[in-house]
Each structure stands twice: as structure tokens, then as C-alpha cells.
Image 1: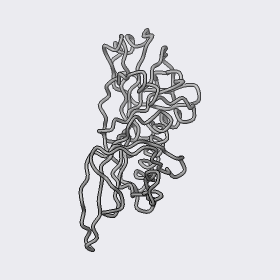
Image 2: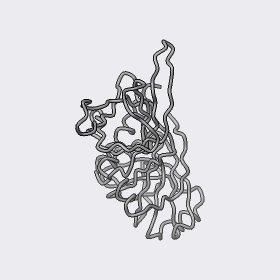
Image 3: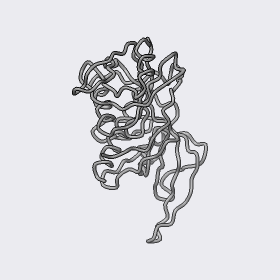
Image 4: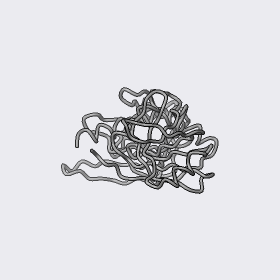
Length: 253
């Protein structure tokens, strides 16, 4: 069983915009994420008593209606949790934080074992902070960032290669004189075709640049770029791509 790098099991407090941006409503996606947590045995926290206390637990299983979790080894905790009208579940899947709220909790048997039973959530937060990590784009499945040219210029477009990507931004690489990268420059309506996911359209801000000389003497330019105001639809597409890429990385280990 592959253990993930743990993410702090703290409740995420989000603005209204972030809450909408990172919230998943698809039943199939929710069930897939929760089943993934079950398979990896990733720890989860259950917050109760107006978020003043919590227990650590693991997901035992899910179906279309219910989520089952280990009960606490301390019966006093179990007795305090059961009357709660607000339970907050916090865990992670493929290094992305997962969080949802339940308003009732019961004790039930799961495979002849005493367990907590929560209703399957109607939505959940699937939140990957930009400072968690960047993923290298596979050489065999390259991505490019299509940057539209300025109106009236002879160049139709620039297509630098994406070296790594995260919810926060991308590292782009091109020939030394291909693209006029400079810190502070903003490129709008940039398109990134995410294989089997869809077209990501974003505005990027160049944060830094540096020149690389390859072993064969070829000179390339690399730019670290930040996504600016990525909207909810685009953020979800990117999350799906990153989740798929992480899943492929795990299966190849």
C-alpha cells in the first residue's frame, strides 16, 4: 500500500470565491476521491464539538449513500461525537486536501466491525495550495503553452514547452529568442491543451527568467510564471489533470 506525503489535517477556511473555485459537486468524482483515500489508508481527522476537538481516523469504505470510518479507541470520544450536528471531515488524496461537512453521524457495522457512518456528501472541497508542490510534465506526454501574438505582428503565436505545472503556475521553456519573456509581463488568453481533460485558458504573469545552456551547447530560456485569477471552471480542469498525472506517477513506481 502506497503511503502519501501527509498534509496537515487542519480545517481550511476559505473566502466565498475560493469555496466555489475548489468545490466539487459531481457524485462520481466525490466517490472516486473518497475511494482513493480508502485505498491508500490516508489518515483523516473528524472535527466535532463546534470544531473544538477532533479524532484521527481512517476511511473503511464508501458506497453511493454512505461513508464508513473507524471509531475512536476511546469510547468517551465516540459518545461525544454522536450527538454532534456538524462534523467536518479533513483528509488528503494524492497530496490534495479533501474536506466536507456532515450534519449527522451514526454507529453502524461495516464488515462486522463497529464504525462511524456518515451520509455521502453532496459536495466537497478539493484544495491544492500552490506551495505544496509542482509536478514535472512527462517528456513522453509534453504540454505546450500557446501564447497569442500581438495584433499586427508577423509571428502568429509562441508555443513554449511546459516543464512543470501546479495550481499556482507553470515553468515555461523555449529557445533563447523565441518568446519575449521578462519579469512582470502578463500574457492573456494562453491555451494549454490538457490530454483527455480539455483546454485550459489562462492569464499568466512572468515572475522570473533565467538562461540555460544545454550539454550540446544549445541555449534556452526558462520562465517561472504564475496563473492570474484562474476561474473556477479552469481550476477544476487543472485539478483533474494534476490528479490524473499524480495517479500515473504512483502506478509507475
